[in-house]
Amino acid sequence: MSDQSTPQGGAAKAWSGRFSEPVSDLVKRYTASVFFDNRMASQDIRGSLAHARMLARQGIISAQDLADIERGMAQIVGEIERGEFNWNLDDEDVHLNIEKRLTALVGDAGKRLHTGRSRNDQVATDIRLWLRDAIDTILGLITEFQQAVLDLAEHHAATPLPGFTHLQVAQPVTFGHHLMAYFEMTRRDAERFADCRKRVNRLPLGSAALAGTTFPIDREFVAEQLGFDEVCYNSLDAVSDRDFAIEFCAASSLLITHLSRLSEELILWMSPRVGFIDLADRFCTGSSIMPQKKNPDVPELVRGKTGRVNGSLIALLTLMKGQPLAYNKDNQEDKEPLFDTADTIIDTLRIYADMMGSKVDEATGERIFNVRVKPAAMLGALSQGYATATDLADYLVKRGLPFRDAHEAVALAVRAAEQRGCDLPQIPLDELRAAMAHVPGAVERMGDDVYSVLTVEGSLAARNHIGGTAPEQVRAAIARARQRLA
Image (cartoon, rainbow, N blue to C red; front, side):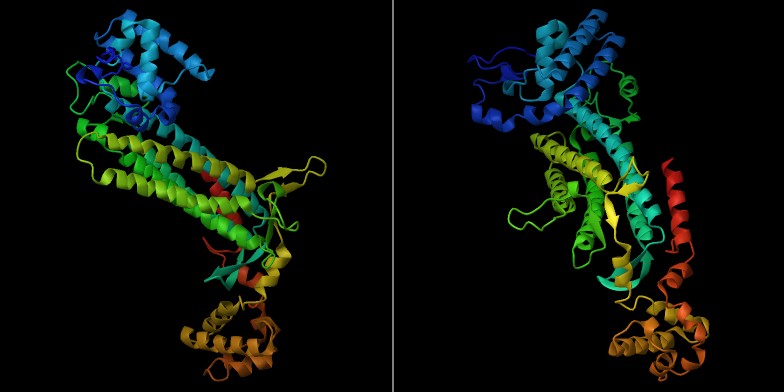
């Protein structure tokens, strides 16, 4: 790597000997990435050390060069950790900043480090290392969120809640069953991130600029040193594509979309007009003018940040769509959307795991949940939407009435309940039969035991199968989920 100055005396560049005038300050600022890609410093150093060890092992650099590089890198790590490292705009990016400092510390050994590689394969390696670390963090945080959901779901495995379609009361479910839907969503999210990690975990280093290198390198050795599962098998592809980053952003978009749906429900449930839950104060804010307000700011902001993450996915797709092979400067624009997506997902999962979590009161030993459920309000809402109408239809079908006839008979019963201003269980048996009299066979199949299926408890208990909302099945689903997380 050249360390010479430009003929005009400008700052040293890795490529400066080719040019007859220095880069302008405006272009320098426009093209530099050091102030956002320096967060990959740890990964850049890890990759460089593995590369140096391979070079020494292959006899491309000397053992003394390797020792000097390792000594210099150790000092650089300390400087970065202590906040003493001087990140210089003139050196463009994290790679050249570290290499320049290394050369200042150890001399020619630092200049030899870049043998057999390019910044093209170097940055592709750094991004993959960084993203692999981010995915591992995210997978751990998804588990924390899921454990919090399981605790809350188990506590409310039998708490009745209106199940909605079209935001209209549909059928009774339990709050625990409702929460377990989000466990299943995030279980698939975790599978997507784990699957994405497999494609992230392939080593580009050794592809050099685009065609490979003339030096006798050992890419498999480097892959083993860095914990990659395999190498990228085409040098052009290795340095130029960012599909792994796009895939990560797609998985992130799905995850935060699921959390946004939960956020929307928490916001609705917390509204005084619904009043199903309350959130712990530390997840809410007040109003500058209305002293009574308690606003669910955290779920609202999660809902808002979903657009941010989705935007990053579109940005990366757009970034890649028109690029010919191989590397192009466009790809410098991959990092900020990727970093922002990972940061947003990690922060969102951390706060959501806390918000859905609980603590044990040291004085009473009682577990206090940050989502405070109001069972009476949930049960009261079930009396407003004829939630057990389907159970009445099923009752008639089990006694031999064709389903379409049963559906019509119950629709007539609901109309009668509306006119009477009551719920189905409150209609006297003779009026219930009278309402259904226009459907042949319905009255004859209506017994005195009909009210047993019109209760919320009876409706819940009747759905006692895998995936059903019966409390017994909810607890079984929670037990299966805990086994998966163990």
